[in-house]
Image (cartoon, rainbow, N blue to C red; front, side, top):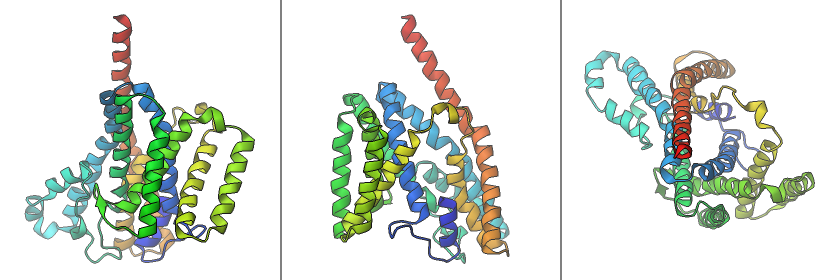
Length: 325
């Protein structure tokens, strides 16, 4: 959904909007944060301490960013600066790689000068600082109480902040991310976390149908911009969770997880296909999809999987050590 939605914006068109609320890409990000909050909160409780929890989360996020940033700033950058390659590579290339890996939104506009969308090569990575900040909050909860009781309070705090930002139009940046994006996506994350901790109370078909119908009606009839936006975030969050809990883990366990690789590589690949290939809109979308999935598969098999499996082995060894003592 994100790749499809971004292709419109990167091609100079308006992105489609669903229910007058968000683009398909925006909704996909909401779904991601909802599901992430639901699953990561459980992981936090299982981890038992801040260090082990954050170690697992860092292994998920950071290793794949290294080859992705090298792909953008070294490979693509060298191709675009072939006439002054020595000067380019001796400049701030490696500083930008470091900025990307540490979630600081490195400036890549020199690579997109003259593009239809000239704001950079890594525009989709804005959500990583939000995701990582949510992980930090989960880690703090684990280290302080290791109890799920704080998640509804954290969700309520983000809800109040989101209402304020939407109503007032407050504009600023936190962690290099616009505040409105930060608080609304954080709200979805901790609504997912709160639902994870209370699943036995709502995981009934009648409750799920009633909830979706009522929030949908409210979304469709809301006249206030705040009500419309907030009900939209809540609706798509609960839909994501309700659908997710209907699937058995056995259906997806052991499957290849290319989603993160697709997320980090799609934007630069689309920028290249749209602006350097003389092909049509849908042809460039198909080419972008094929190339992105290829890069994502390489990222999964040669980078991400190795670090994730290493994380599991370290955890198992630590558990065995505790049990033996």
